[in-house]
Length: 309
Length: 249
Image (cartoon, rainbow over all chains, first blue to last red; front, top):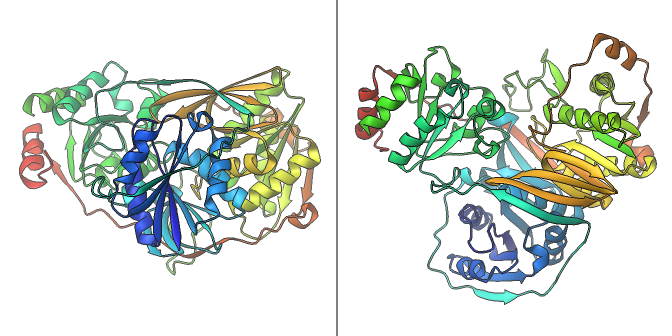
């Protein structure tokens, strides 16, 4: 039995979510290989080779994969997958874009966002915004699986020395073209990788007021997130969104400020280790999941919090 | 250009669902059912394409038991031109749905398809991608902006940390993200008109698709409960608890 993990990366760096997928793959069992497909991604392959438990790294370094276009990536993965019993990736926006295509082209089901491995073909995954946990058994011989990173500890990044093997397959389907990408640069940790997350909701009233949260975030080396209400109101960009259809986070400390706690938001953060809620409405549902609730006007409480830290 | 939109019947997003006590499934007794929110955004975008003269016809397809007609009627009231129900009592999984929709695309000569990025019941986020792969259509998931001109679709999509723009050669498929548009409300006259619009019924057998489930749900259970927390009286008390009790700062 052999398992292939698809590396999540930026062409220059291996993304930490890959390490969570590796942990899930090791639990499923079998010899573990990693596929790094990108353009100018040699450093990523070297990083992947240092993950303990990985016996081989396959590198497809070609311009066709530089932008991770779904058509090209899935054609490559399907070709490589023939030698494996399971193909696994962290459930990042990129893998969500590519992996269902791989499953369809292999004519197998995909098991999305597993949070636990119960056996080689049996998994747990949240459905209905995390209000229900389903135990599912994959009936297809070959498995295509995405892994919710918050469900698995990260594997160590160093200590291994896997062989690196280049694959020359170049799949350029030519039906889609990358035009550009605008990615916000930030010195703060990434939302899904941060140890502390400070999030604001509709109660922040406008985008300028998020500066109050940024001061707290800077003191705690935290990422800043938001509820869908705050994103829809245009306070902050959409990639701040934490929730069922946004990012799923599980930091050590999650501070929810001016967030009422809709089911869809809770789905994105309720596995955090410690949850703090600051809201002036004592009946806000967020208090039902908060370890520490403070009923207060956020415009008084947040500046006081940053002064105290 | 004919446009296909898929609409799924799901438990309304305001309902907090519960597993049945024996773990055999979800308790759907007397639960309000609605059109999946991302599918509603798909219908709106398709109707806008027709209003702009880019699309000639918008076909709304739903798959499942007879009750799905209700969601097709909703789509027709929002402006879709006609509906197709693919009727079956078998539990349809994403791969089967993708194969059935592919068959409809071939039958109808569809050039553009719009699907929701995920349904809020299964949270799978698969069907659109699977359909694009099987039908050989170019693909842009998580779309927040769409322009179609000269046989190309320019799509802005939501990616990690920002936005990406792709150019797709038609035939193409997109899946909707929340910010693609704000769906309109169906007016009463349009709801009445929708009742008269054409709605055909097909079966998986007629489309030649095997819909046997590939994943078996062994049980469903509620998630582990969080233990009840406490209210603190002041910021000072909060910081003290975080430092000395929870030890997270």
